[in-house]
Image (tube, rainbow, N blue to C red; front, side, top):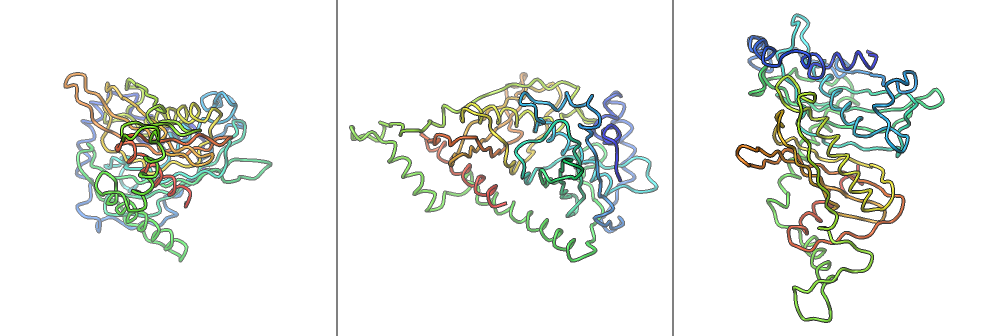
Length: 394
């Protein structure tokens, strides 16, 4: 189905509809929806991939009045806004997959669990050409759904690809307190079978990547050699001391690449559960990451890939969201940026991590080599190298 952009926004259950109402009243009404939840997945009718397929037009060319919201200083489209739209579309696709004909309201609360991958094949998104988003559910577990989305832009009468995105959404009960079952997915062709199997492989890859995390496992022998070589390359040969370090030519200490930001989380960006939209968090993290890459490379950077964004905990309205980012790996023109976000509770003075974002940028010119100094920075360097290699293989 093709929806006008405004209609798309208004149809997104977690976007506009409840923001105009008191969220406490809305939550009271949702409690009654518990009786509509399936007791087991087998009670729900299976769905086909085409049942959740959506096609949405962002009319930047045909409706210039909405262009301002998407425009950046380089006269191209703000990628942070695209991240927000992808997040909203992913939620809408999942609601379409789980919609029951006899239910006027969905008992499910669908939230973004993670962004598996976003790969771009175009550096510039033009602000005066219509954009088309397409997507459908590509894999289903018991309570989770993988969504594959594609973005294309109109040029000379034809839509050409701009990016591919893979999100994972989870279904929760009406009050977002526990998991809820979703409709199973039945592939109908060998092509769909391959897409579904890829979703299963993606799940296994995420498990393997998490198991091999440098927070859990020691670096490999090859990685240890890389770090030791960097360490030897930064020793001051004039002294016989491990403490005396010297920055090699055309290099930057990792600690000198940091930038930080603070966001007060206002109700304008909340969903029905009084929590901040995932797309908003992605936009803010991306904008900080872009500023870091711009500052580091000395020229305009272009986003190449977004990788492995895990939503570890929700961000409540009223929270202070602290963002900190740094360059953690470089190679030729590429800049790998890591952005860490955490919420600060002013009453308890506790800090809790909410997200870690990984962005791969390409600069117009070759960039200096980033150099870790401490063991902790060395682990960030290796983790950045892993994410960079992953983005290049996709």
